[in-house]
Image (cartoon, rainbow, N blue to C red):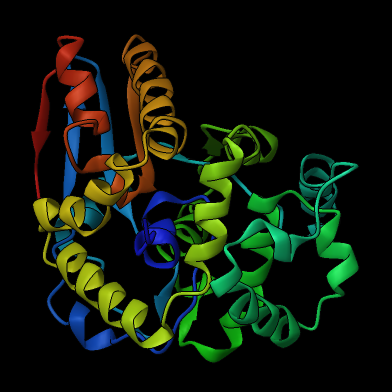
Length: 298
């Protein structure tokens, strides 16, 4: 299976960044990304699906979203990476990413993919020996990093970065649903076959991935949740381990968090990758099964 969603899809799942080529800010000319709320007499939880990396100048804030952000007393994200202390995240990553006795990384892909992987490693300027000590999922994420310089997608332009700045400027608290270690551990728990699929996903055609990402970006901007789901959720469903660990289990955890939060008065905005709010296993679907009413307001 070719994981076409790996670089484009992770931008909507929140587990890592992606890179492939310039994305179009024009797709966001008239933004109406989907927004929901769960509310009772004294509590409101807004649910907003995000894209973690965006082109510079991308427009995605609508009047409805602005009102929801202004009404919210706090913001809750998937996880918070301390950009002022990147060493802390790196240490957490390496604790999970390295294991003794691993085979050389080139031996973890089919023979017909080894040349492409060797080329990707050479372009990354990372020492092959250091990658050989890393688990396959970590190699996949490491190889995405060097691709960022060849794209026009930026962390600082992403939805989370902008929302964090807005809430911080207003003096409102910002929380997280998962610690950095909890989030990375979902990768670490993947079976080796699924990890190798991720690694193969880094070798996909940059032009093809860029086209797919632009399509997903356009769907997100116009609030087409069904298209977001079709963009990558169906492919994840063909790999049960990936679907279960990276999507279903996390959605179930967050659903329980929201259900508990509904017992506390006040208003909060929960912003998670748009892929978690699309498809049959979305957070909204899980909330509905627990008897909570979810209303789409944009």
